[in-house]
Length: 291
Length: 264
Image 1 (cartoon, one colour):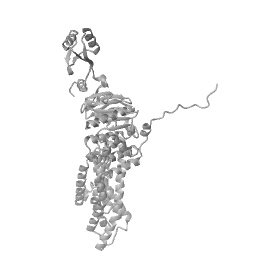
Image 2: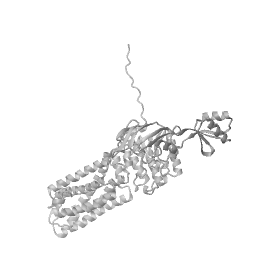
Image 3: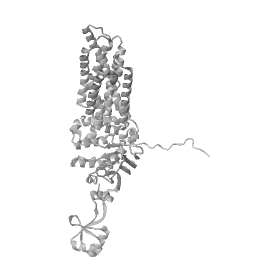
Image 4: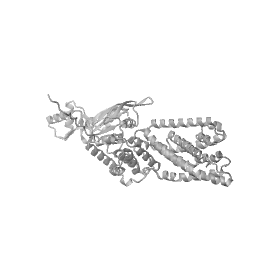
């Protein structure tokens, strides 16, 4: 659905995006993860034709975004929820967009209801909260019901209820076959939404893969009734151990090896599972903790 | 050996609906309609545009009362001053339309829906052209009435009805030039407040400077060609040509800047 090859952007001699490439398949939610200034927004702006890449290119369904005659039907884009005229109402903002897209104006009210802004449709955008503006931006992206959504920090400024409804909306959208590319610097926000994570730091893609794969570690978390005996068995097997959360022990070995050793030693286990890295740990490991 | 009489073409794959819609460009008329709705988009916009003709008529009346009536050129002079002050609210509307879109970054969602900046700019130009035509028509219809009243009052003959084509030409040129100068300021300064301040400081200053030294400041005064066309004795052909070229260059440069401007 979306393909990017070697996207590079240099501003005044400084490379802010460096050879970013990826491909998105329909029916998936992909998170573009990285700290502020990592190059996420610039990459999304290059994909949506607002910024010209220094090198590389991106296509949506085979063509560059700006080469489509009516690109809003290919991709709904939310880059900046604040990029709205504060004197207009939410309804007028979307009606103007509907006119530009060549669809009936009544669609504006439909998408406003979808994002929970039906009651605020006639209110000036200047009186909207940050979260309401973000939802209006999402409504703008959903206006034409496109097969692809490109969303820059869509959860930014939303309250917990708003976050949950956006997550549900995006998951349902992907279930219907839609493709979602969303960026975030809030690591905990994407783990419940994304099938795949692209970690970006200093303008480069540092990691790309399913979330479970990226966050899997070589350690096992094990808990036994007799933790001293368990520690002795691990030490005898030359497996490094560390205390872990909830009374568990982190053993630097796969679960199969830990299971085999504890079974042979006759230690009854209360719990054994592979350790999953948090996204924070993953990010700091990939960036060397300096981003 | 037998050959089939017809060869069936492989069935064409039906493109999904979004593909068909994405391949069909939205008509230019829709873009123009959107820009018109933006012109009237807020309550302050509507009030500004509602009061604009009232102000124009009021200012024309005031300046026509102070004008000298000895010659056709003198009877035309108040028009040149009137359009600079009387169209003040119209300038506000135009500057807000063009500069406001960039200031509030609302150009971004527009360009995401309709990426061709030339089409976007052309649609805004059509709106400004419409504003110009309405302003010029109103000026052309009302101004001679006030001048006739003043000429009667001063016991001079009313001279503008001798050459209505000339009056129309000066009106069209004057209103066009002053609106273009507002448009140019809005194109170069993507902040409506800054653009309004610059416009309302620079244009009156140029008017004063031009009246003090027309040979010097006429070359940068946006209305110099209209002054020449209106037969003003201190207007020079060279100054009018240089001024016209200068403001045309600024207009083209403004369009190029918008083509390249970062959309937020």
